[in-house]
Length: 436
Image 1 (cartoon, rainbow, N blue to C red):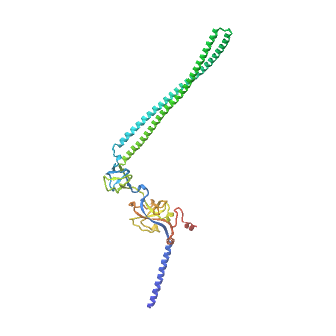
Image 2: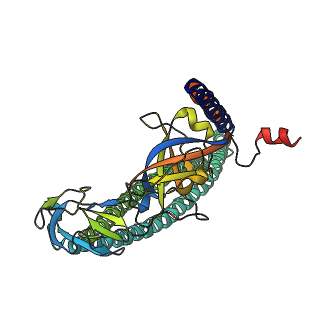
Image 3: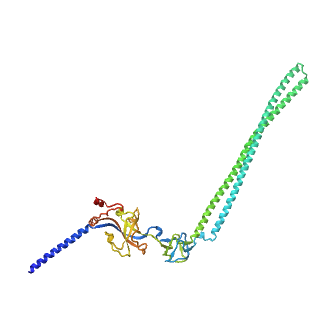
């Protein structure tokens, strides 16, 4: 009897074990065919979308000595509020009357430019007068030259007439001499004819002398005309040289004025750098602990401003193998350090404590560590991110990809294959096949 009961209990236990095995196997098979959302997990930190919303250090543009502080750590400032005042430390800017003296130098140089302008005008008038005198003298010399030429023609005509008269007187003398030998003409007539011949020769010689004098006068007139051109050419060249010298001096003075005006503007702008103001709204932090009287260099941080209004984002770093699967606008589930979370990576709808986001920007180049940087911003149409978030808080993100069966995900993980790519605006090809 005892053996029969033991046998029946063993059979019942075996059947019960078989049922349990069957149930577990069936459950496991059903589990394998459950849908699983593929995802890419990566760590990140909270940052901002825009560079001007990130904490920035306040730096003086010029070196100086801190004279007075107007803020302390934790103060809220608006854009343009005074943070501190610094004093000058460079010797070339210590003169308190530097701006006034520079302005006086500019005024003196401007007066010099006016003087050069007056000098240039006077030289231009002198050039005009010299040109007029040159033209008048040349015209006068030309008239004299023409007069001497006319006189030369007149003297030449008189010379020819004197030559004719001398030749006639000679012929008459010869004829009367022959007649006197024949006693047709008296000796007195012959002597008178000889006197007339000598007078004609004398007039001929005188006329030749006048012609030579006139020829010399023509040459002198020509030389005088040439001398006038050369003389006035030299005077005009010298005056033009003086004019160009004055113009050059005027331009140099104007260049010096431009440099002085630049210096003047630089001095005015530098005076504005003594007061260091807040570049934007925010909270003051990390001020210099040394206080008043220390000397700071240009570009040295004296405090940090944390902006008040920021658009938070999460900065992620993706492996190159996952980069082709990342798209701008793709959904992302974000976990922030300090907020309780229960995560089911394959079933995002069952996850608790995550915050939705979407990809805002993707870098096209690798960073120094060999990763791509991705920015994720909050999805405004869904659950809002915590207001208590601060820049620099750690996070973990799940970038949702394609939905696949669990068995496929296990097979992919065991073989080390990348997740399947799925475009947000394109349906799964398997769904189209199923519908057909």
